[in-house]
Amino acid sequence: MGSDESNGRDSASVPPDLPGDVTPSSLPEGLVAGVTDVDATISARPCRTLRIALISGEASGDLLGADLAKALRRETGQDLTFEFVGVGGAAMRHAGVDVWWDCQELAVMGLAEVLRHLPRLLRLRRALLDRLMAFRPDLVVGIDAPDFNLGLERRLRERGVRTAHYVSPSLWAWRQGRAAKIGRSAERVLCLFPNEPKIYAQYAVDARFVGHPTAASMPFEPDVATARQRLGLAPEGRYLAVLPGSRGSELQRQAEPFLRAAALFRRAHPTFELLIPHASTRTAETMQRLWQQEIANAPDAAGDDRPSAEELRGLRAVSHEFAGQSHAVLAAADLVMLASGTATLEAMLAKKPMVVGYRIAPLTHFIVKRMGLLKVDRYSLPNMLADGDLVDECMQNDCRGEVLAARLRALWEDPARRAALQPVYRQLHQTLLPPEHDAAARALMELLNANDRHGPVPTAHP
Image 1 (cartoon, rainbow, N blue to C red):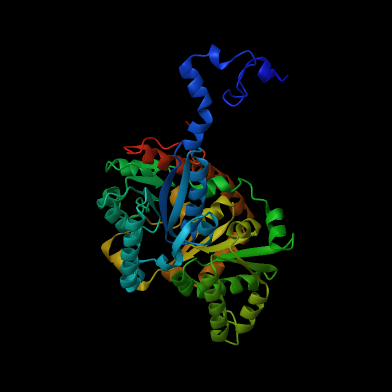
Image 2 (image 1 turned 90 degrees about the vertical axis):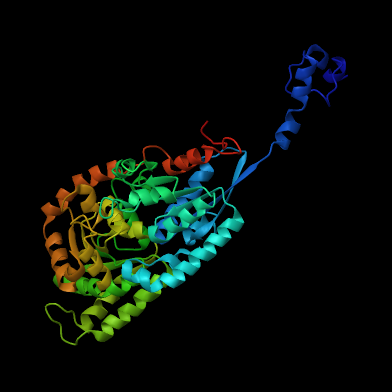
């Protein structure tokens, strides 16, 4: 006879993990009921779904949104699921976000560009606001794109929707007083740079330094050999990475001087080949058109400040273009020429010598200068972080092919100067690391737990 029968036990009512000498009759009545109902209690426990909207305005924000969605899932317990929606790109789609509009719809920059696209952007924001109110999110996170997102966040907050803003505008550079306005739009600001929360504190705005995710994802020492193998490049080749921008308007203004500079630089250093990563299919198509346009407009005879059509055709013949993979391209490069913006930070974290060039629309430049809106003399993130002239900047009227080429030549022909960059790059890299793992996700979960009518959100870190 089996042991259950010999002990007088009812195998259907006694959990199998009770000791063999314990029977229902030997336990208090309430405890027996609690033990036998454990499975039913677990299966009946409600599973809460958090609805999160992530609103990104460009390629770099798309990557941040994708990483944030993944981190939020990691930071939660078993009794919680997420539904992510918003505006983004391929990275956010791959991370499981239901992308309502592509972030390229928001990818305009500068006062003049915003004014030109303002009617379309306002229509999009109204449509997005209506759709978000119908969706009833638990939290809306605007990722960068402050001209678009802060107004959206303010309107949502006025309607009782919880909001946060990820990536602070550059308050240290211009219009520091915006901090108060940002505080009216977002309950919490997630800052990528350690000096930013102090500025917000002056305006009683809740801001947290969460570190720069790119600093956490990029190694202190770039693996050049692996990057070149991954990209199908010659191990011993010489490569100039060219990143003229991720927005169409940036490419329109900067492709010409960048391509001319690359051709003029290669005139002095003919072993160099070009590496060009594209943020999207759209930017790749725009770049192909600009290549053709530049070659068609080039003179037959070369000049000191202008490459010939033959030189440009030769440059294109040794150009390697990639869909995405900007980090691998930077790791593989010997030298970098790029537009001011997030890419300069990535080049610094890749420990690469660089020359920065940038043009904004003439009207935007006039307004900024005339109104004294710019509070710094430096434009690129490495120089702002170092509070000095760490890398060369060729801005506005200086962003010309012959000027960029001269700066590239001077940098490449000065090994001591390139070596001196390395310890500064490493120190800046260290200061940008997140204070804890998944710091941005944890800051948002903490915000969601504050005054939450549903009670604390289950997390993976009690």
